Length: 198
Ligand code: GRF
Image (spheres, protein in one colour):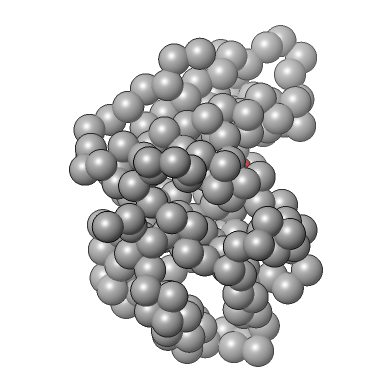
């Protein structure tokens, strides 16, 4: 039976679109839900235009009560019989309670070569550090931020006079290749590290 995937977004949803596009034919997963915490995100509109099941679960009415938000989120995921979660630019950090409910079942894509540059502003930090390469990582989500087991990476060169904007674009285009490959491998039971060659 195909695994039912929820893709969680907060922004433009370009990784979501790459995943959706890849999940055709004999793919072991089906997009069963695209969910956003942000009612105004373009990504949710894009998913709707594709006829995908969408839910907006706005975080604002929950204020600072992260647990209450996550309980509502968990219920939505159960209602859609979700097996696995793909975070694709979902700008919320989960509590241990939520992670333990979904242990080994949440993937994330991060725009750096983890373990370098956890958190935000990854491209500028790579440039500022004088690195000659940057990239993206797909990893399992654990209670430690951006520190779960690595499933795969793709690298890009950093050029002289590079800017965070240009680097972000090049990394993003690798993200769109890497995430679909890793999701397919993961659903087929592969957990060993994969490196995407340019
Ligand atoms: C990507 O850079 C991803 O690595 C990060 O959030 C961004 C989402 O971009 N986690 P998009 O919404 O998929 O275009």
